[in-house]
Length: 556
Image (cartoon, rainbow, N blue to C red; front, top):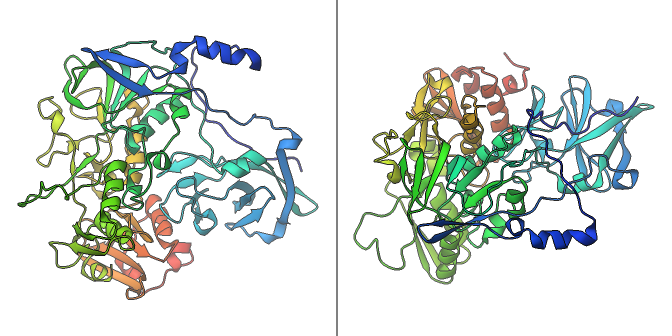
């Protein structure tokens, strides 16, 4: 049997043909020095103030047809070693591979989730895709493509053949070491040298939603100008990691290296605060007076930390955490001292846990009698508070863009606001959740921000409805796994041992299971998420018995 498999690139729409001349190595440096716009950050001049964005040269990529010396090939098992629906990690010398048997066919993929490195062999194989056991990202077994978030990258797909009842895998050594694949993207065919006061797409906010929107536009062949702007001084970074690793430096948190943004023509304005949006003239006005016209606008400003309202809130040793500098300062000043964390939400508890080994003492203050009671229920709260964040949408109050009473931006299923051509995504929005009768909900979770970022490219004419969540809001405690949307539950059914923190909790409303959370019980939440994603309703009676066979399809 011949080789099967290989990487499958997304099909791009027809774009203007661009012929690139590659200079010999000896002449390349001379050419780069003579092209100012490629060799250094560009600057906008807005009322005399310089505005900088980051960009860099094209990333090196693996040759599409690697030679024999760049590949490794080995027999990894007998053809009968895998039953249908099974997964196995196999060793290929230069790295491990996930071998999957689905619908009678064998597939070989990267074995780690590109998001946080979870072993996919411990995940769930269902309906032609593998779901990560930690945070629920899904990958198509036929292509390796990322189909559900969180995360930015897909898996490599390796070649499989069968000879004399043995299974052979052939893979690129580089791909085995990288364990992630970035989808093919278009580049900007109309770069703007020097000053330019207009862009086709403007994205306010460079968190998960904003970055995913920009990447999805490029993946779908959009080749006009894209500008991301952010209050931060850094390129897009993984903000949820701040409370888990207060010592981390910005470069350790970066979602993409700076070279990525130049390679794909995505411009990033740092330390750029939008103060007003003129929707009539399609123009954003920045704090320093710089004005940028746009054709389409995506609002993804995220949330601002909720500050104290009591006396003494402004003293010099009271901090909130929003940036790497905030986190670094907190851990530095807390070393060997008494630290007080206000709020026993997930972020507060993560900070407290991180400081426990560094501070002299750590005290946690919480207004609720039981932490996490409103989100996880009384019993789970005792064994382990709602998330304290407010939408960063104050700059929109005079814009004509609708805000609800809490400051969130209501959007429709296409992530569009009340203004045509203006979209919003991420922590700052409320959107219709289809499987909760289109109730407008806010889900401030990184997976939802990623997913909404892919719904937002209607800004370039290729939109899609916003997805329903497979994860619920705000659960960033290590080993805590959520699924569904649990607001308004009226009962909690717990299987496992709360005292040992090894349990699964089913949150029900009436006769229906609407959300699930677990600790140290992987991969049950990923299995539940897959059931919910299939459109199947889980009934309360199914989980009351303790029989989980319905998750594997062997039950009723």
